[in-house]
Image 1 (spheres, rainbow, N blue to C red):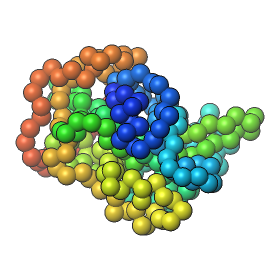
Image 2 (cartoon, rainbow, N blue to C red):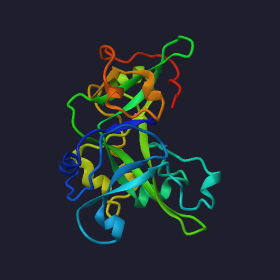
Image 3 (cartoon, helix red, strand yellow):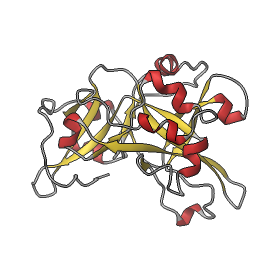
Image 4 (cartoon, rainbow, N blue to C red):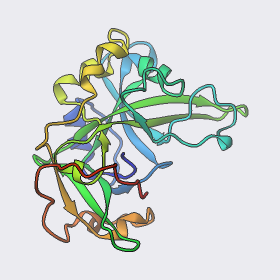
Amino acid sequence: MCGRFGLIATPEEVGEAFDITGIDPFPPRYNIAPSQPILMVVSASELTGGGEGRNALLVRWGLIPAWVKDARDFSLLFNARSETAAEKPAFRGSMRHFRTLVPASGFFEWRRTGEKGGAQPYWIRPRHGGVIAFAGLMSPWLGADGTEIDTGTILTTSSSGVIAHIHERSPVVIAPADYERWLDCRNYEPREVADLMKPPPADFFEALPVSKAVSNARNMGADLIEPIGPALEGEPEDEGPGQMDLF
């Protein structure tokens, strides 16, 4: 799954990575949690019905489908299974019309240790560093009182590499060469981008143990991604059922 992630790149680095100009300033964010605003990159033509290029906008993390009447009675959907998103009523419309990219520097996942109350958090980041793009979906929502909110979710897939030691699911990562096809909802239907929703190469990520302070969403400092031990090593083994989400 993906219930916490970080974006510590500068606005300039994000703009360069996604070919966007004029991104509003933002600080490094080390512990982004569901219900908080997240940055999403969208095709300008999909957002406005015209224009070229890409735009960046803030979206509340936790998708609310357009057909929901009262958001207070609906659980925010912060993750969506990529294998079924095109068929599920909650995500079907967004898969067809509002595919997005979510800039990230890495994400957190928890591994059960077998000790009482024990769960070791890991900061999972690309070995090559830099900014990566999670596959996202957006859903504009209009409340009965006229409230308008852009909401979104992050797509997940089966884990690969060292992540499979920690959890059975991880975010879908879209490669830069595929950004345009993923974002182009006018010319590419969900079935035509299904091949992009796959686990990354086994050696793409590294997993570093970090402080359990990250488990509290109120903690937001740079110390949250400082390793407290060596990176997790080894090829995935059959460890039985996937680990429990502990967000």
